[in-house]
Image (cartoon, rainbow, N blue to C red; front, side, top):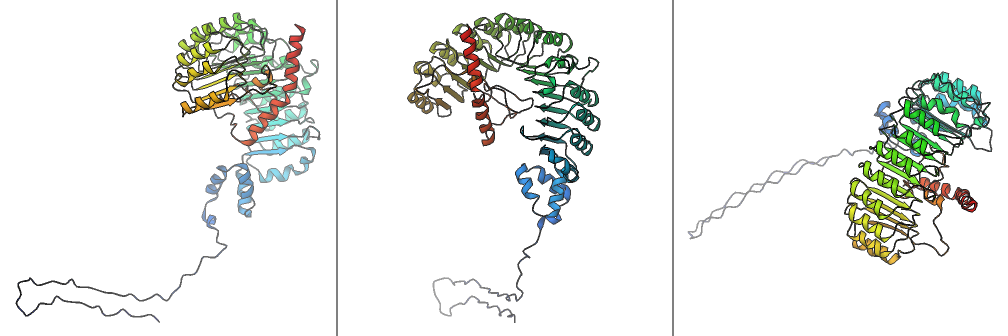
Length: 534
């Protein structure tokens, strides 16, 4: 039973009857109130209460979109509603494209009905899905915008034609280690009028020039913005696609056989809006570089292991392409690009922000002009340079006021030259020094202590380290990436400023190490054969 409240007690002020000189004392009244004790006890909530049941499906799908793939998989196991919503809202999907996948395609895409980005990858030792499976997937995903095919060797030109007919909204296509040829790519270009990015790597169907005729010159890919060709024996069959793409911005050619100067000459006439060009281990000469000089919008240039390119071609290009921001040059120690080309860049390219020189021998004369005229230079890397010593690094420290990242590898510098970095380059935030025998670990620690905000990455040369390996300076580009293939000068040397490649995760760092060491023997042996023949 509850208790009733007690009667309040009130005390009034009391006055003494005796006369006194002291004034009467006033006592404050005190009021005391007590409340009845409640007799009803609150019960705990039921243990199986689902607070997400009141959330609309649309809100729960938004939450799923904010989660990584691994967490989405765990969420799909919570209850049947989450399982259904996670599948219906998933837009990105990667599948093991073995032949056994064919029987599961209807069930899979009944659940994942909103997929717009699909990756089909098969182990090279297993049988992949064929034309029937690819056609069935294409019919189930009419809204597909991105597709990646890896080692799907059973897919032929007919399968690609079926894909193109069912997925007209395709915007990005990346194929590698497949067996179809140029006809399959031509079918996609004809039907998918919104295609913006095309990446073709190691197509077995291009090994025979008779079986892989050139793509029809009638195709005008107006929507195409980026093209990447890699390790193709008969890559010239795509030349008409590139030259007939008036809105092309990015062109990347990696280790493709044949003479590519004629293509660059066609680009200089038909495609004037190119902003980024990557040329790696190609038969390209000064003739091709001079043709590229007709592209005034060029901002990014990578010349990696192109021994026929010299100072002459680079000078002509720099004089007309004044908007260049990033330049990567791997001279392969042929000494055909040096001070003359760098002086032309310094005089004509004031917007230069990133400069990577591998196997190039610049002197203080050209570097002083680069540091003086290119006031926006933020990232600089010099690797395997025999002429970059203390005088050159002192010049860099005094002149490059905007420099933020500096990488030096395999160069004849010493502690004396590095001391200039203690007070020079006021905006410098990161320094990498690798395999420089004249720099000691004690000095690297002193530099780190003298500039507390400066990150110093020091790698002392081992007892067996000789000249720096060429393979360690430039990535062997053997990864399975799409159009984001780039040299280690931008990643391993710590010069990348964007989020296109995030090397902070363990998986990406592990893949980078594997790709580097996997190609080391090939590049080193090729390099030795080149010098042995000389």
